[in-house]
Image (cartoon, rainbow, N blue to C red; front, side, top):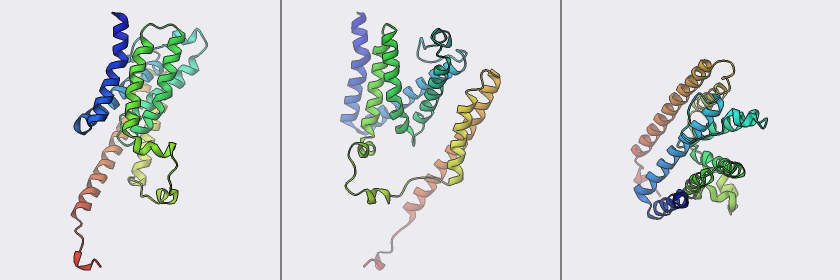
Length: 236
């Protein structure tokens, strides 16, 4: 019975990935959004659990805590993993940087699988392997953007000249500043737990405000583009 459950931890994500990517349409969009939200929430919870010295509960359990890692003098490693998980979670929960978060998540899952396997954690490697399958599904979804890493473009100059979808420079800087404040605030637990939460909350507000402004600019640009009607009489 236990072996059957462990097999389902891998087979169900495999089936969901194959069906969603094969069928496409709304089912594929639902799979991509759901996987990003699920994996992003897991990473945020795991990162905050480590950075708050286990005061903020995570969604995955039992996560490795400072007491366990302290036995092996790995407290700094725990902070590094916590910051990395926090950053990956933030990236996954954005539309624009979700692919970067998925790429970074692959070595994170592999690290967890082999670490828990080495420590003989029952069941955890199988569960995390299922999450790895979902992450690989996100990478397959974005294969048109990833393929240039595997196959150099035939005309690199044309790729370099392709316009990039960005927002106003000030808003872009504000977004990354908010992320930096969130990540920096996550390291303030040794000073004060309230200061940690307050700083991260301020950074989150900056990120949300900048994201809303970027979304508004993109929407306004798309609307303006649809309103432009070419003068066919001047077309030669």
